[in-house]
Length: 253
Image (cartoon, rainbow, N blue to C red; front, side, top):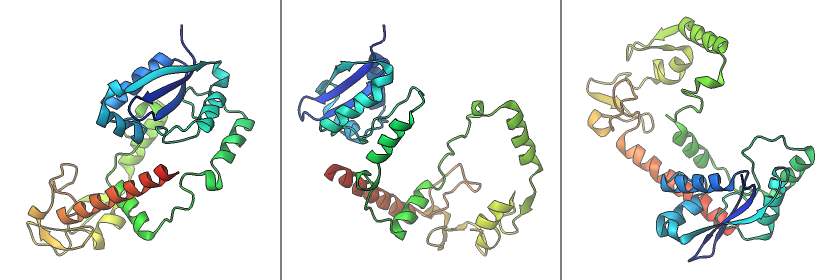
């Protein structure tokens, strides 16, 4: 028999808690343990605590059993009344696919609007936007390899379209690419324009450097990263600082 209701994960040392809801609480607890063990838990607060103290410091308990239709509202009640420091989001969420009522949507909207939104007041500077853009470069598309989300007819259309797409030859690197890629990465913007053999132009600092100054990357045509080691190191440092700022903001609120 499935235990449907609200559960709690509590630390013995710090007494910090995490509140959640599930149709099958036992299965959800096993998933929490698996994600924590793999270091991929959605709550960075709970993940860091686990990495420091281990699973033995966490106590899992059932707070309340309730009907499936009442799960989200009951969970939100506990999130509002308790100091759930392990919850990265203080808004009750659902993963079982039930249709939300208009009243529930209105309540969630009010809870996440204006000053109630965790990111309210955060300044989006040009540097911040540039860091986000650089961090997303080279990321794997969300739908790559997930062919089951498309029908066979749609997949066939995509393949035919890709085969018939006109490609342009770049005179600098001798690669045939689509018009969109050519405009962005080739032609006048090609990293091999006026670059001697054995050298490469960094896409960030625009300096022409020996390929020894680039990390190897099998995903690139020439086998090297588009950014030099120095620029990539700076990017990683900026990303780390940005994540820390967001973490401190959540911690204060």
